[in-house]
Image 1 (cartoon, one colour):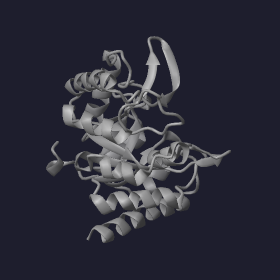
Image 2 (cartoon, rainbow, N blue to C red; image 1 turned 90 degrees about the horizontal axis):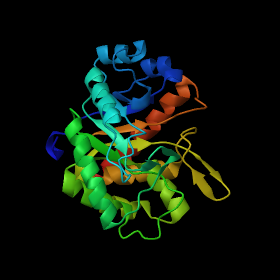
Image 3 (cartoon, rainbow, N blue to C red; image 1 turned 90 degrees about the vertical axis):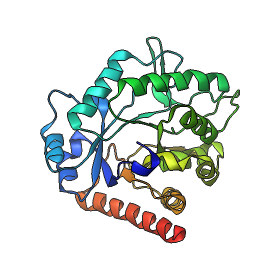
Image 4 (cartoon, rainbow, N blue to C red; image 1 turned 135 degrees about the horizontal axis):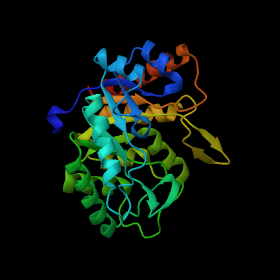
Length: 276
């Protein structure tokens, strides 16, 4: 999937079983589902209905652990591949994150050490994952509460070199860029300047909460204007194939969810106007 023939997705929302009827009623162009919650041999009635309507469904992995020293688990890769085939997905997405060491689970999507040694290991992990999947793979930048002291590259530089070495696509989470800006002082606009946005697959938008000066990317609130400003900045640089709203708990009404999607569309329009 080259930059010129990327899947055009539109504006979407993360499908969750708790809001399956809401998602069915909303005016969305595509949805994303957590791959670990999908049973490829017996899709939920709601996901099957969306697929029958022609709505693209993207499996989004949270547990592959492609950022670890171990090679990707064959069973987890097989599950991602089966999800992609069952959903007729245009691509699969995962996080560029460390999640486990052996049998020890981190419980969080932790940032990887951004060293050249780690880059070589992760690039091979990405190649193995790509070879096991029937569709392109996109990797997401993560929200961080800390950075490794031995980091040699910024996150954007690390992702850029990973894209160059492997051809992997990008899932840019603008809420995660905002999180890193608040918590680590990493300017989101500088990151957008460095990221290879020509390889963008789609974008995540979400809200969170500030506690004690630390931003928590909880996906349980409307996106703050600062996150939508970053989305507009991104859209001022490139036309994203898709933008997706994540909301994982404390779900609002259908009307409030639709209003949040409209806020996303408005931010995209502001960015397009600036680019035009």
